[in-house]
Image 1 (tube, rainbow, N blue to C red):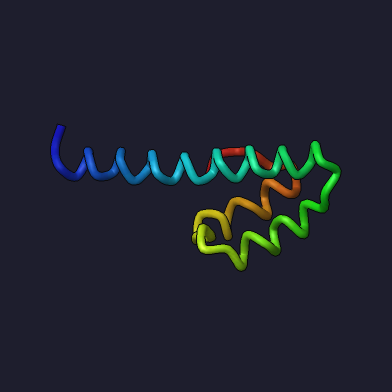
Image 2: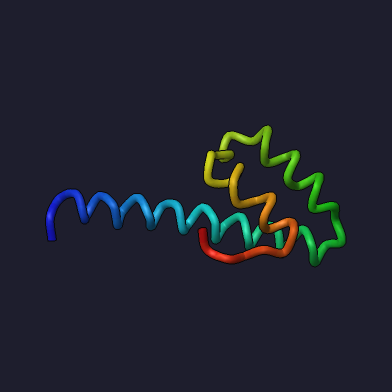
Length: 68
């Protein structure tokens, strides 16, 4: 496997981990009967926010968990 392929796989793993963590956090918020919108607002102002979350979190709030 070449360097570019290895880097691509590594970056995809990081992106997948980000989306997985957001989905788990959203499940916790949901089970705790807290506002998903407040969670989303908190994430926008959090150091762990990213372009990936900016794209995926609104979709998750709508119940859309389809891959991009």
